[in-house]
Image 1 (cartoon, each protein chain N blue to C red):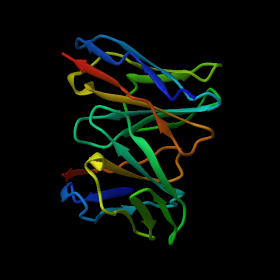
Image 2 (image 1 turned 180 degrees about the vertical axis):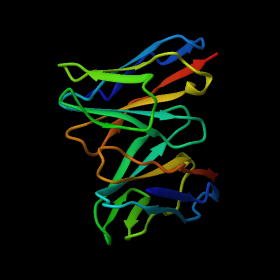
Image 3 (image 1 turned 90 degrees about the vertical axis):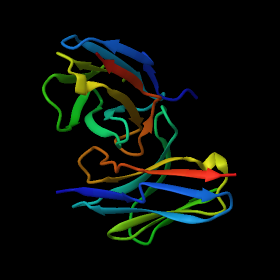
Length: 111
Length: 109
């Protein structure tokens, strides 16, 4: 079975721009979570969606938003990019809201 | 306030030299604790979930244990391919995982 997939793999953006990251969960998984991982740190929770509804939100500004589609795939949007948004963005899927399985991540660089 | 601390930050072992990694946590309403392995530039790989104090789980050379304040990841006779960053993540039951900063393990042949 295919694992969690994320696109794109790498992305370079300029300050002030907008970015959309995409995630496809493991087949049958209905929950998707997003995390931000800065170099040398552990992943930090951004959002969780279950059955297309937001189930949790971390301590991130309103520039960050997400949604989940009927096929359970998800998008993370970040507006007005800052240099500090440079990080590895991880998507994780789970059957309910537990035992999360991570994708390979999207490496975002903001210049 | 929920807190998690992993120690040591980095650990170098000779191949075959067993050791333990520590994860200390202060989390109200702990629902479970997760261990992940992460290779550089990749997403974390799920290893274990522990739900209650006294629980132990094993996988190949790894064994995870849980108390009310700590979790340990024991590595027995490690091999170079065990080199990675090991992350622990208590779940406070708020629909998210609260990750530590990890222990970077290097196993020298």
